[in-house]
Image 1 (cartoon, rainbow, N blue to C red):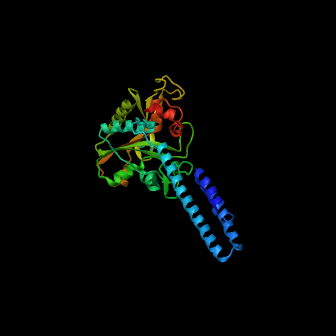
Image 2: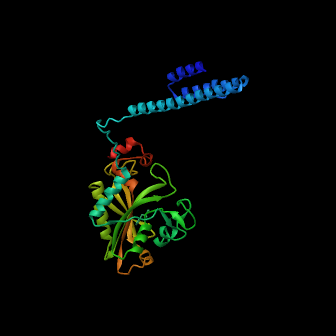
Image 3: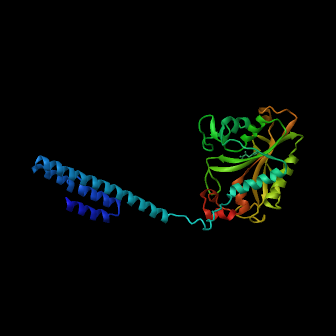
Length: 333
Ligand code: PHE
């Protein structure tokens, strides 16, 4: 018994890890351990001796158990101290510099457009990306058989609900909730089943609407010409007759090609002009649909933000806006 005790003491003194403790425990207290073996030797002894021997084994067992527990606590404490020392923080070190991102070119372009219109007195409104067919088409005087309502062009969610194909439903939303006069722009995402180097299934538009008494086409021309000249610099602006179901008369607006200066190039298809806007005087049916009084009229316009950004910053692939390559985005900080 004495030898067992000495052997145990030598081992425990050397133990450094919890794994060592586990092994020592198995060696002495396990089923086939040294202490268990001692109990087996009791068989051949007389009653008195048995009592004495048993007492001593139990004492030894208790001693081993206590020593193991103590050692284990010691090991844990040493480990804790070590890790505290290793992980300690030097609070006198200078702070790491945070990484500052930059504004996305689309956001930047929207902010530039907003600033120009705000300076003219326009408010900024928001609409809904998920819209009713009624607001995206019906209330805007777009009849059931209009080609824009084709499944080929529009993402339908069900028969009545869709992803808006333009920001024009916001015209209806605002006019339904506000009495005239109204004067606002509304930037936001729109969705169309279209994808190539200049088209993306999700892109951004800015809608504009001005309703008041005595508004004329000349007001539309003045506001949009000024806006385009501020945004693109001093470029020629021309209005061409066009068609939209929700405006009458309607026009498309071109600016002199800013790539070639009007000489003709690939970007302007050798015309010297770039189409940048759709607009017109709000159709009487639209004003009737929102119950605006007869003496009110006005104009509306819509523009594509990606197109504005591509032209202003000379970007030739729309995918660059959505890939989020940090080397591209960084250039707009
Ligand atoms: N909603 C039209 C489009 O997406 C643009 C537009 C808006 C035209 C307002 C006229 C008036 O093409």
